Length: 612
Image 1 (cartoon, rainbow, N blue to C red):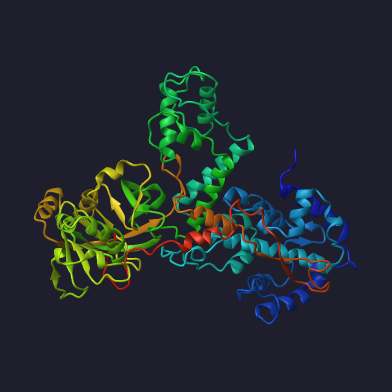
Image 2: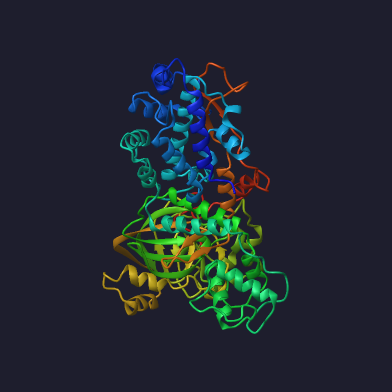
């Protein structure tokens, strides 16, 4: 059995340093500090050549760290790894448990030597102080990047989507200075732990990741063989495989079936629990869709947990004392107070070509019996064909026609317009749907002004909420029970259910300003953990997991000891880029095509707050 990689490195590096670090009787920190100070001081001023293509200098945080510790090596000495060096390797060795990859934070020669079990002395000569300094600097660079990735994420969300408008975690930490203090005070382990996001959602995912990593180390779970739908009353080896599969992911209630090959009520209850965790219809039967979810390998579940941990690193620890959260892949709006979800309701979100954006806003008012000013694109693309085929369509739907978007626009008779002559390039009219039972916005609209002009609203199409997959709108969020949300928001303003229904029955537009505006967060999480510890997974409906995974595989530059053609032999601080893991099994640029075909949501070329 191969020992943990950090233990292998510890033992090997200790042997290397004990055997090789004797140069004229002086420790490397005594001989190299002046050269290290000279190189790093130059780097901090930005006057060297170690600047990446983006214009930022990765040596500046390294220089600031060594300035704080007096420009001496901190991880190694003449006898091998110091205690803080051992703590560093132990911390990086556990980075896989935290959704990161340990290889990202080790110098390339250590990665290769550990993987191939090659003696480091055969790979890297460490028989002079300069090599030891290079090794120390490479470790410092790695731990600084590790700290930054833990606290803020490895990828910036804006690099995935320029229209990422959610609330961003504010970076106020001085990581080089904090790391220097932690090293000097001997509390590196506690410092690394403090860098993790402190939110309950992140902590739940972190715990779930360790659970699924343990499942992987134990061999994963078995696949259910193809065959007819499994249901209560069935028996056989496929049922026995199913019961074993459900046991591995703790889908059992306290009761365990007496006969694992029999599909009884206990197995049926476990199947329903699994189905609810994965956004499937909980019918207790294992058909094609449920079997597909059961057979997804544990490695893919681990990846999904890691991706969603990365997303939570982008957010602040707190989203507010109370707030509304729409999780797009879950098709659900939650009302949150403190860390508790006090209510939830089913939602409909934008389809793939008209995606609901990720953003944070502040709900300030709502409208009862709202008008719907139909966006130009929806008017010519969706409404125009119906008006052409059915001259009575607009009248039946309560849609009025105006000659412009001006406030003083003149209303026109829709029967006097030759709709066949209109097109996407020529549509000079404004369409407005008045309050009614068929109004596309329903009876209430919740407003949180934002650059995308999306909002939350009612809908007359209640039957659509019976679907499990509900990416059906043009970008805005529809609610199944909007009056429940309205009553919650207005409960301290003298509005109860009766008053709401009375106002709605008048079919007159009414704006109600919230005395206490509430934050709104439209988020995208394909994995999360409930308060009871139940791990949930959902389909990546917008393929954002794929884009994020691709971005995480983009290589970063390392500060390393370079040999041969990588750098000049006398260059103390050389840089090069190491290739990451094999690319995804998709065309590298395919996600860019997907992003390019996404259509804008909400406001269209100057129209007022509109959308569907």
